[in-house]
Image 1 (cartoon, rainbow, N blue to C red):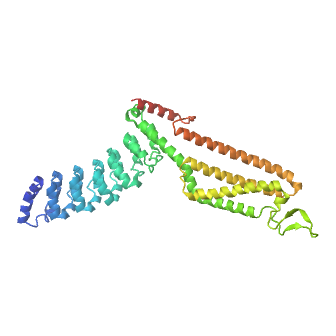
Image 2: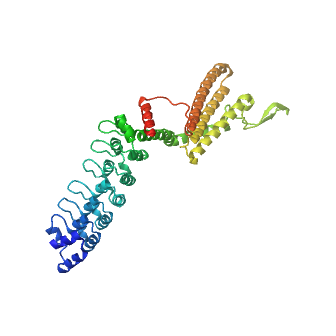
Length: 438
């Protein structure tokens, strides 16, 4: 047995074959006679790839044997950072991806610490659960932050993206840990990930921004955290603001569609049967055969003859309400990119126009069917209501138009007005200016 371990330490494949010719069951007895390391452990530790391949060919079960520290040969290969040997061991014993040693480490943990990107790309798809397992309260993503392994973190985030907001035993997410560790590249990468919750709080009720604000100014300038974190947070806030109308539209899409269909139905019905109804029969000549002064035919609107001016306004407002409601339906089913403010603004204006003309149509209809003795008081109410309504619509239209223009100018680097909301925003801007000068 001693000669077997010597051949493993030297990587002497020929000596191994000679020993097996003498005793063909030599490798099978290793598990019982060597409680510490197997020859495969020794060969992996020394980095003898041909020897490892030979043992795996002869006795592949040795890839699943554990030493006295509960470490498999795969643990040893990953601790050394030996990519080629680790690949052979993964193929021979894929179940070892979930095996933990006496300290709780599994192969994914070790690969994350060592930054073995190629191995993580093979390990994690085979055993995604291993990335979730914790050692010392840290999962594989936390370990990447702790050891500054950005490449390994990219692989893990791609494969197990749901862990980006997972917390360690202290309640810290990977963003908290990156801020505390002043790892600017990792912070910048995390802030570009839309799934990272920047408002997540740890067990001390602190967000990543709260932890950032506790860093001394000198440290902020030296580490560059001020520049990266401030700009990243502002970018995410802008993105959140930009997506708010889109989220609102997504949630209310069906409701808006129903309302548009109802308004279109109402406008169609009002156009077919206007207030006052329609004439039921033709009236062109009197009974004595003489022509009437104001002839009409069956199906024509009574309102068109009794209130010609009101009927013209009624047709205009009702037609606009009908057309704009149909336009709203077409816009909602067209699949236009409403993330763009211009399309959102167009839809908003059309919806406002639809509601406004519907209200105007109602006012005209009520005015026409009201007896003349009551029209004076009614006209005052309608006039005031329409004035208030149009005023509100005008304010909203102008306000949103100004906001759209302001955003368009900001995207081109022209800032007209920016409110001073928080004192620490100014302090951050000063720190950013200093870091840029450096």
